[in-house]
Image (cartoon, rainbow, N blue to C red; front, side, top):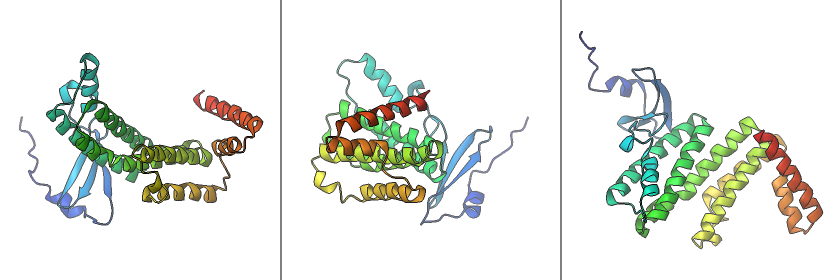
Length: 250
């Protein structure tokens, strides 16, 4: 049996799929075995990513991702610390999940973008817990606001599709709270209000209010009631919030 020979070059792809330096160009394609793949057009080439597990399709040490491998090791090791090789592999995984997260956002696959953002944030947390190299940790932490921004966008737009604008606004507020906590952790509270990512999320929130004619969410009403010391109203609002959460989970 003679195997079909595939070309060693990607001339056809590069010639028929133009690179746009001003836009993120992404598409779904089908692999030789029929599996779904993502492709991102970049200058002088194409990135191809798996849609599940690690974007590069590898299973480090038989695990779904390198983060899963690290979790397995940390469970059985006392005083677990990351090695230099771990740090290299972690950096690779951060980059891979960034590219796929961007692809999902571009394709409006918000739940999947949310999942990849959560993977990155969990891996960042793991690095802080198991490394004493502050410079290396900060090389990731400087991007935490950007990952939180993507996560909040994805969560809000997924909520808008499934539960409506009020839930979407609540997701934006939760994201803003996480960003504010991050700024406070690094004693940069004074920079929070002027931060570009914060401003863009506030713009998203107010655009949702205007587009869908939504007033204050229950959580925002609760915060105002507590601030005004209207505790009876606050109690009713808490009960209503609990009822809604229960109905969504049921």
